Image 1 (cartoon, helix red, strand yellow):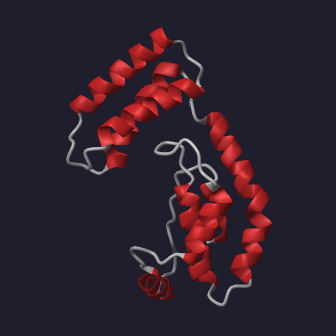
Image 2 (image 1 turned 60 degrees about the vertical axis):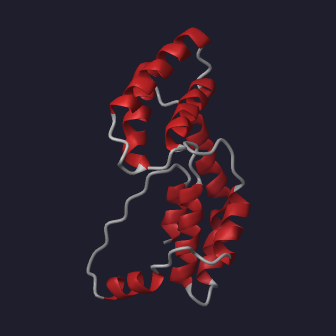
Length: 165
């Protein structure tokens, strides 16, 4: 885990509390509980394993999902672009590679680590930039011999992009 992860999780809690419009007294109590939860976790695990208990605590304390509104907005934003993205994938010389890049852009659509993002710009960057790790060839090879595929999604809006893949 990176040293910046812990303060980032604290910022995520504060951001979730602001989205939920809780007063500062309630917010301080929830933030304090989140800090205690962070202190009780193993810090040598990947950030998503640390994020899950922190975000679960926030949802439990608030009695609702603080990201519900932004999830709905993310889905709407992705759905508006769906036809364009579908056309882009189907007209590509390599539809699978293009669909993978669109799915990567959808995965970036995550309000945990980022408060805002430009989805169209993110899609364009994912379509044009080299990937740091490109497993496309290995995936194509594995898919050619597969009879089924399990595909997991985790971000709102992402599922619209994953549908293309």
